Length: 215
Image (cartoon, rainbow, N blue to C red):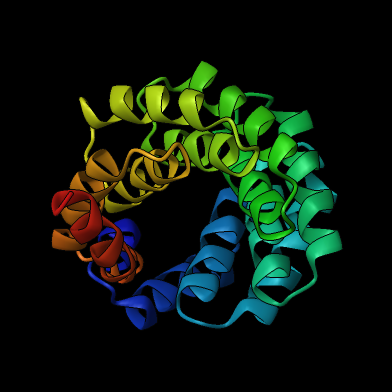
């Protein structure tokens, strides 16, 4: 019932049910985790943080609590602790792809593209079809100026999952390699899928393409 309430967004009812079970004498760590999770998704991260810290004291290898605590620190802007607890979660469960994802996101935000590349490859080893991992991989290759590699990975990824980011990055790499026709084709698809960045690129490409077309 608690899980159903959460799925339906009825956080108040879910929290009441959990609190009732805990008040009845159940000190199951799973209930404490559920309580923290409900608080977190309902916009009460500081209260959730206290409970996650309690569950970690009771079970230092609780990778889910470690990861969710990392997310809270990330949302609060404490990147140092976010990294620390995401790494703790990985030590507890080395194939925890959510922790790798969070670390990859923070590395991308800090322009640490070699780390993004490494983390994305770890994610792909765990789940070869993970769309976010492929986005990170192509993003990292693009920013490391490995444009041909990024195009190759992007074209493979598009066969399985079409995303505006991948089309945009493939277009960008073609532009960098002076292939304006292929750049435009990918930007157009990305733009149609809602990418404003691709739309802006198309406006910039128009004069160059007009010159080529008229020669």
